[in-house]
Amino acid sequence: MTDASLAVSTVIFALRSSGRFGEDAGERRLWLPLVRRIREPFDGKWALPGGPLGAGEGLAEAATSTLARTTGLSPRYLEQLYAFGDPGRSGENAGSADGAACGGRVVSVVYWALVGDEEARAARVGQNVRWFPADELPPLAFDHELIVEYALWRLRNKVEYSRIASAFLGGSFTLAQLREVYEAVLGRALDPANFRRQIEASGVLEDTGEVLTGVRHRPPRLYRYNEAVDLADQGPLGRLAQK
Amino acid sequence: MTDASLAVSTVIFALRSSGRFGEDAGERRLWLPLVRRIREPFDGKWALPGGPLGAGEGLAEAATSTLARTTGLSPRYLEQLYAFGDPGRSGENAGSADGAACGGRVVSVVYWALVGDEEARAARVGQNVRWFPADELPPLAFDHELIVEYALWRLRNKVEYSRIASAFLGGSFTLAQLREVYEAVLGRALDPANFRRQIEASGVLEDTGEVLTGVRHRPPRLYRYNEAVDLADQGPLGRLAQK
DNA sequence: TCAAAAGTGTTTTATGTACACCCATGG
DNA sequence: CCATGGGTGTACATAAAACACTTTTGA
Image 1 (spheres, rainbow over the protein chains, first blue to last red):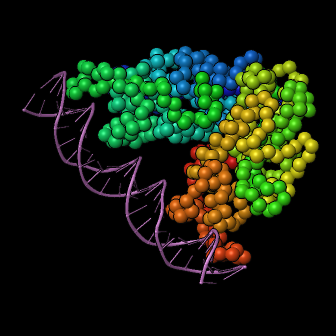
Image 2: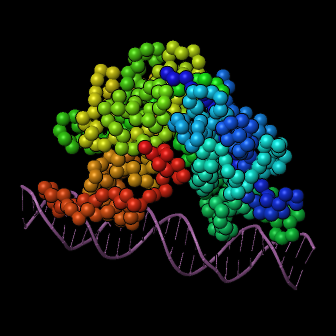
């Protein structure tokens, strides 16, 4: 059995308004936090947050602590994306968040995570941590561009047949809010009438009986996710993959 | 960066007739090779073939060499399944093919592979390697039962929206043969007429212009897969994941 | 009363399914 | 000529898309 360096990186997604100051100013887009590397290789470039796998730590656990360290947040959804470990890919020590000095090979397991909307506003930002719109990323270290692209592909696929969209919302929400999440993730407008029927037919939502007041039009109903319904998600792995 | 033991295991699927002697005697079922463990833990139990990750070896490369060592075959399809690395799962050193003596933690990356029909007949079989029907497995070591179940789930999902069924067949085949693969994998009968239309509409098949003769009914046409068509497969990873 | 979004209804289109039926070959 | 599977046609059910229309609120 070969000993190797093991690291865990995480692609963290949040859905935030594009306008910097006004709340709900612009339309919502996907954002993700990156960290600036402070050593070779790729010194100064932006990269996915990550770190070494702690001694008694599980893989998902390591991804969670990465997320906490980087953004101060805890994930509403977490899933393994892929394990990268081919030697000499894309420069060197590809996929690793910290593969500089060590001479041996580096295998890194990448997770992807979703964090809530309001929480993300309060996320930590520093000189070496910055949020970027998912479609306006700077050049990244290693092959992290490919990894982000793959994570986006998984997110877009999954939003259509699972309930992950709820990870971007609070405990209760209107159908318009839910639709906005779908639209932001899929990148296209959806027909409100048909969206309503599809969601209702799927049976994943419960009517809370309450409505959202204070809007200058007809008050929309508030829904919550029906926890009893368990959609075909990741198959047999189920809760194993989802923290 | 933590040093850890790294192993690669592979779930290998073949589609073989259930009848032992007569060719094409019984109906086709999914089979997979297992190896008997010869050390603790789980000494004597059957487990997924696997081994340590070689020094300069890529992950998929290691899975391929595992497959060659176990069955003497090369995969017609290979894809990463999942990386297991939580400490103390399902006994100990779960997911690893050989995690006995070493005191440290073990992370193992599991692949799944498909091998051709005829090749599989000539596959190596020894005292410590035996093929089992996928739905009649003996008790397995570690949490390998869960892993096989997950691999089966992925296979069944993927056969419906990709061309992996061709991995079980030769270069040209009849629609009935292709349908048999689908039926064996999905575990249910399919309407021949509708199957034909769906496949033809997808555009993934080319007519070779030839027919299969020697059958005691109307000779069926032979098709091949249209290499030009590239279905939405694994997204951006594409050829990275597929060897 | 008007704008704006919530919510409902209806029509059209595409897709999947069931099944009747003809075609071509070996025996 | 007949049994067998190859291959085609067609009717029906279900789901998706397009879009007209009514409802309810704040301003």
